[in-house]
Length: 138
Image 1 (cartoon, rainbow, N blue to C red):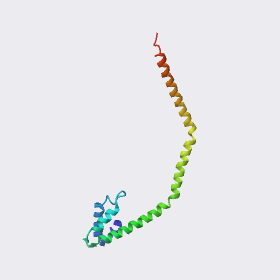
Image 2: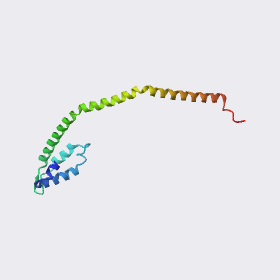
Image 3: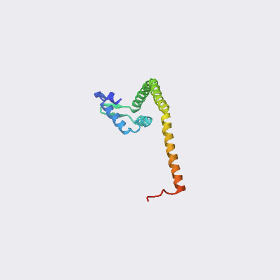
Image 4: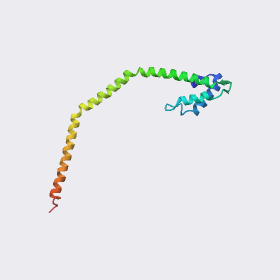
């Protein structure tokens, strides 16, 4: 809405008003914010005059809600169309996981080697405890 108002000389006052309001309520208007809180604050404002523009906050709020709803509907339609792409990406990921699982025999061999190494080390420790330290030089 702000971009649409900026080039219109007759709407400069409206643009300045909305820009100040958006800065003041930037947290509510962020992706993690609560836009309804900003809308409620806008709706509660009295009529104002900015430059040559008469600003009717409740009417402006209704227009913003309509534009927000329309943008949400457009986005929902766009995201609904990405379902096939999401399925392809997910399938590709699962295929990669399957390839890594198929390569499991080499992983199993590596684990067996590590287990054998640990068993050998444990056997040496037991042997050294029973027999004592090895003799040193002559």
